[in-house]
Image 1 (tube, one colour):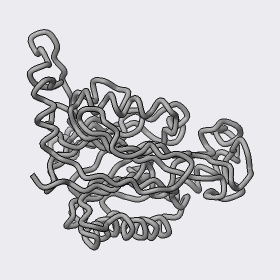
Image 2 (cartoon, helix red, strand yellow):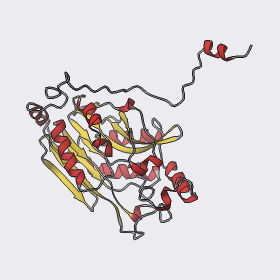
Image 3 (tube, one colour):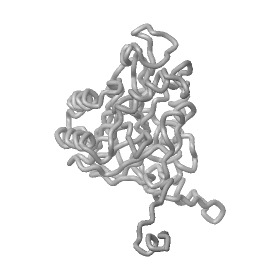
Image 4 (tube, helix red, strand yellow):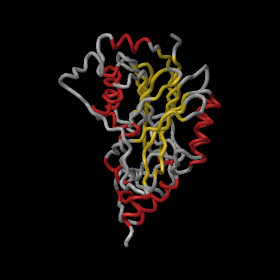
Length: 321
């Protein structure tokens, strides 16, 4: 089977600037899409930035204060709509560079912001949208929760791919829902730059018997406006997110990374036969699952906070005589 060539991007977003962020994606794709690259995952919230400075603590999290509200206003302005023109531009970049593109965005969905990952095929078609179902800690003051309707794997020309965002990876039932869809590649875009993250990625590769590709941002204080947020230091070189991106095979072997304290593009050639070979001995959603004892039900229906029932009969019933 032909090797799958992947390039994992670890770099800084252009905070709150969608146009500049998409231009940066184009620059990085031009670097990543060499030697027949098939798949390029980007970090969580790359367009247009993770809310660093709002989640460190300090006045940035004061939702009743002007500082926090104006920071949020600026952050909100850097979100995109899906589908929409910015989404189409990202798809066009995937097609131009002939790669399957996985990229984190901040999505304006109704009146709420969602941490979302867009999954484009190499022809530029949007194959899937994954919305983070559970924001972490202070993220909950900035992003909304999403329902289970996006918990779908996508089929690409290189195989089946699932995406699990940041600390969703610590939700074992969510992982099982992704494994059960027969994935070959497990993308874990994140903003977690802790050393412990690497241990989790190796565990997930072994548990799911799949290739794990984790992309994390690398950013400094200078990557954010000087009048924005609250950081432990205002030194322009202060590292806000140190990275830690990595590529792991289905037996837990680290093929590339983790790289910290630098921007980078990690590369590897992946042998898909390792997925099947690994599941010979362990298949978390197959022969090792014991459905007679354990059973997981996943609700993938779309949920709304308000349902408008506009059928004619209902309208007539609601009218006064």
